[in-house]
Image (cartoon, rainbow, N blue to C red; front, side, top):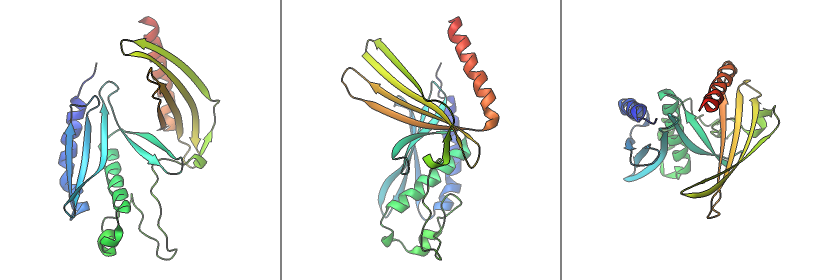
Length: 229
């Protein structure tokens, strides 16, 4: 059963956090718009810069799985990845990161350097003047940081319903982040429909070592439920 209760509660929390966020982003005004008319309701964040309204962050809500998520482009992996946002703090960090990425994409020659420095935080590293370079913001570990520890699993699924026939090619594997020891579940889905329009989605889902046992138990509960029903 799907419910938008969590969506509304999170929207209320985000709106309460806007004044604090605007203090950090001053003099820029941040706007939040919620949209529940979509299949996956969303939060969209825009900023007014020099009389030009720019959209810099979109967070979607899956009402069936009760999870918030967004997509970002990973330069090192050269792909669009899906990131899950589990609580308000993770959302605020992600919103700040996307805002700073927008500033990086803008023509910084139109901004005074001293003005730009004000918006730096722990999420964005200030320029190291001694080395004359900037540290790039990367969400999630790079491919070089992951040690893949499982065999590749490939699943082929075919479904037929009133909307037509669909094929799903799913690629799964598990790795470990070398620096932290955290786990990474890699999930790549290639969907092919009757109209031969392929859609591909890649996800890197992180988890802590302490979570692994509980994740296994949840999967066992799911399989047991499927067998009974």
